[in-house]
Image 1 (cartoon, rainbow, N blue to C red):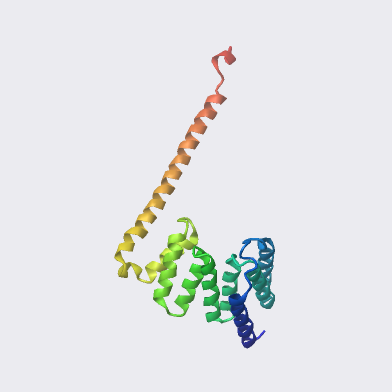
Image 2 (cartoon, helix red, strand yellow; image 1 turned 60 degrees about the vertical axis):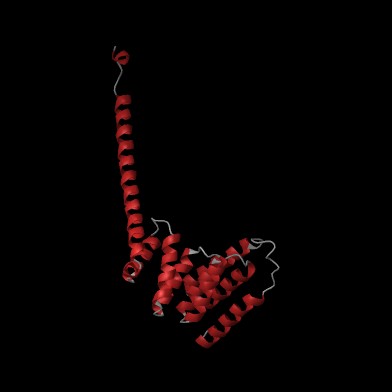
Length: 204
């Protein structure tokens, strides 16, 4: 499918989201299983290079369940791969409209805005991704590194303490965990030795 055709299909799909009947709104998740199946099919097709098939599957997944944010994020990735950056932005934003705490969509929007040279918007979405993420998640760590690279610590000096205090807390947590494991192994070894030593009664 050429770029013009892709743009036409994508525009039609995004427009259809505005006029879809709200038949499923009263029963959210009613068709989630079917939507999940279409989403998986779309991902598999995308991995195989069948982008047209992936587009169709993601669109079906998104249309089936209006509360399902993931296929919109997938569509954003697909549109971005095809150079349809505005369509990608709209798809990511739709994913976040459905689920404002969707970390992957925040990360994808941040990357897209960096690509577009829109630094402030990129910073906003990296901040959201950082705030929402688990401290041990590689993408949370990546969000932190991007915030540092984008000079956020110079513009918002108060953030520096938050970022580094969080990092210190993680390091402290890891150190405490390692010490707990050492203590556990030491106790275990001690009891293994005790159990392996014959008692006085057994020696008689």
